Amino acid sequence: MNISTSNQLPIPPHFNPQKVGEVWRVPYQQRAEEARNWAKKHKIQPASEDNNRICLLLIDVQNTFCLPEFELFVGGKSGTGAIDDNIRLCEFIYRNLGAIATIVPTMDTHTAMQIFHPIFWVNQAGEHPIPTATHITPVDIEKGIWKVNPGVAYSLGYEYELLEKHAYHYVQQLSQGGKYPLTVWSYHSMLGGIGHALVSAVEEAIFFHCIARNSQTQFELKGNNPLTENYSVLSPEVLHGFDKRPIAQKNTRLIQQLLKFDAVIIAGQAKSHCVAWTIADLLTEIQQINPELAKKVYLLEDCTSPVVVPNVVDYTEAADAAFERFASAGMHLIKSTDAIF
Image 1 (cartoon, rainbow, N blue to C red):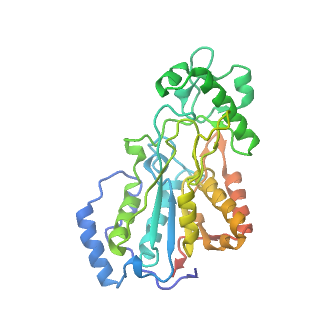
Image 2: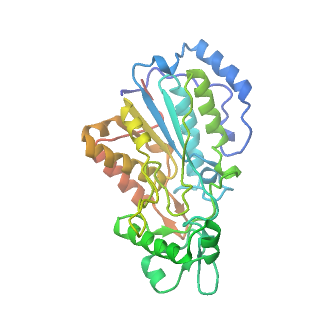
Image 3: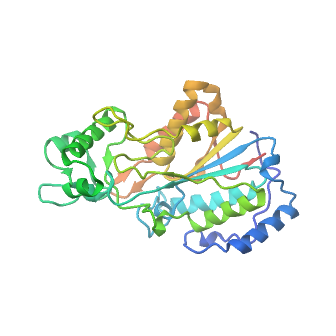
């Protein structure tokens, strides 16, 4: 894939950057008609006619992460990170409408009783952990600081002793595998809730692309397994339980599909977690097949922000270090103002 400042399309008049931080209903029928007319006006061909197949992989561009009033807003260092990222992302999609063949948005998808939510854990007083501020380690479980909530075992249909063994095994695997420790997050990306939905302005841009290019948006759900986190869309954090039995699987289908594209562009939230882990998993697969394939991957560095909670956690350095490692492996760091063709 080549990067150029020429051959860019104008941004359609319906796009309003002031509304990117809001929730609203996309007027599908109106936008569909406008997209068809836009394609005729600018001679945008169907994606099936593209010589170069370019995929835009969007990681968790959902209200729960991208709007300040929602559960896990990714503010980054600036405090407005995800909003600013999505303004640039929408503009990138519109400017490069004729070059992007397929858009693949991932959808973090949760229910309440999952291993990273407060209800899963209790202390000796029966209290649940404080979200975001609580990390659970093997030592915490050994000392009895945190234990599995018996009510969760009943509701999920597991024997309590087996769920206890799994929980201890799980946090051990995270620490031994170089992963972040188990973080207890606020309830987020709840299936059926508004937080689970794509940011309205991004959804609109994706829908506009779908109609203009005759290219079906490919939604990828992740994270609904109660026994493991799923930061990466390509693989859960832990694959096997304490008894060696598989509890989840890699998304081999998507991995193979991504590697068949001529280029894969990646953006979304959060740079330090779901974005970084997805890229890391993709890089692992690439290095096992052919390290040269890393050159097909482009990271939209100004369309992603790290998790920063003032006076609690700041993953900026970890996120930047990960992106430096990806670049060293052959991946390209680009800006949304770069055009593709």
